[in-house]
Length: 269
Image 1 (cartoon, rainbow, N blue to C red):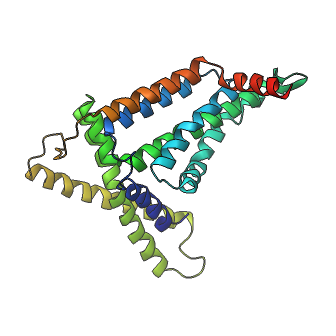
Image 2: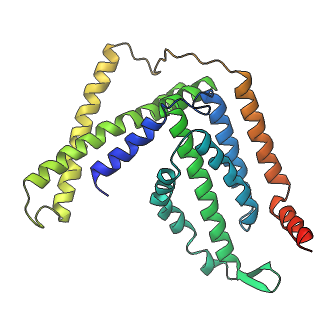
Image 3: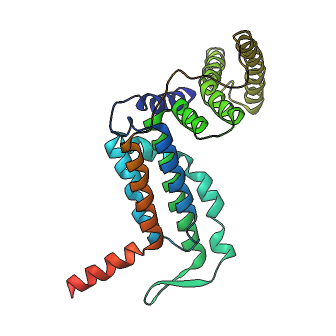
């Protein structure tokens, strides 16, 4: 993936957050709380639970549909970072060779079941986080975290990390374009050139950070980024959090897949 492609992907995720839909109009605090509840409930499942996680896909599907977020775009982002989850769980079948019965007469290695559970949890949590950014914007998330009582220093660090990621990507694209203009064929693609590019990018980043910090201090920065926007929690925000929390509790404590399976068998019989 080129720098230009990665930059455009991050920019598109940011542009999606400024649409006007029923999900975008919700208070950032409500969406942050609902997403945090979703992540906590999903990761609380035991490592051998897979089918019980499937109903949770309804939450990102509904958020994406109501927020008019392209499903293919989110899916590609999840797939792009999935190697991290694969690396975490790929050795489970080796370390956990015991067998479990996922169906009558169908024994499967417990390691493969836990590996599938890791992948499903990863897909659920990452898609929820991407949808939160795509429907709220990262500055909106930081604003919501600050109003929820998170430390100002922590929120400011998150905001600067995201905001100046675009600056870093632009600097990287300039360096890569300069390398491409001065190279021919396979020249300029070795490890030594890559190390020089990283070193140049690091020096430019440090210099830019010093200039930016000096400009911020000159404008009165004291550790917290002020915001002119003032959101107020409405009844729709409270309903969204309560409905989401109720759905998560239902899927967590009620065996929904088993109930659906028994119902289907009863109707078929």
